[in-house]
Length: 88
Length: 246
Image (cartoon, rainbow over the protein chains, first blue to last red):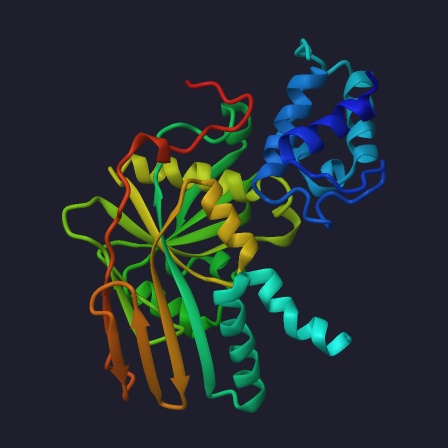
């Protein structure tokens, strides 16, 4: 399963959004995520991909779309800031 | 077609009860700035001892009281006279700071809260350790990040440390985002208040005692008695994914 599919499944399964999804869709602007579940989203990313997110990482620019999240994960992986990812 | 859609939008967004009230208020606002129809929901939110955030994230925020004279007060978007009146009624302003920068704040009143939008005083129940929270504000750059949950996480800890079990608030029924966020934190609606402002006259109808009030002067305020209606464990707030106790 690709990173994109994992993120897609979370939005479908946990958030319950059934509309169109694509990598650059702004999940915050479309109100698919709000000020509360954006933190849940970040916690899921951290646990599922085994990357360590700091408070400074939890900003709109990093979390607003699949492509931004994947870019953040890539940066964390490149920096070696990873932990043990949780299985499906 | 466009006009019909515009007329139906409030029904779609707020439902068949609140929708017409919203529409009527919009019409009133167009007719005169002295005509308003407010629809408030009174919420009671259990104060959770369980953290909403993992300690690594919550540790990045510092909570502290912002007192009268603090330079941070100037950054708050409310009118200066409103902020002054809040301190006069002994309200506490609790700020969340990230790297010494104020990211958001919440105001808290003990015993009662003097509403500044309408002539109403919300009286907290005796015998229940409770506060009234109002004007929760997160600076825009922190809204879609740690801001909201981080502020509530810190506020909960601050309140738990003072033995507080419930926080009441009043929300306009039409602020759907704020309403949703409060409900996610376990808040429940414990009453509704309707206020019709007609120039200097305010007619209030509430589902809580004293139910009906008419005010002709500023000093004549309705004292609305709040009471929590929940006590069951299912109202406890679920911690977020990845939060470990301790």
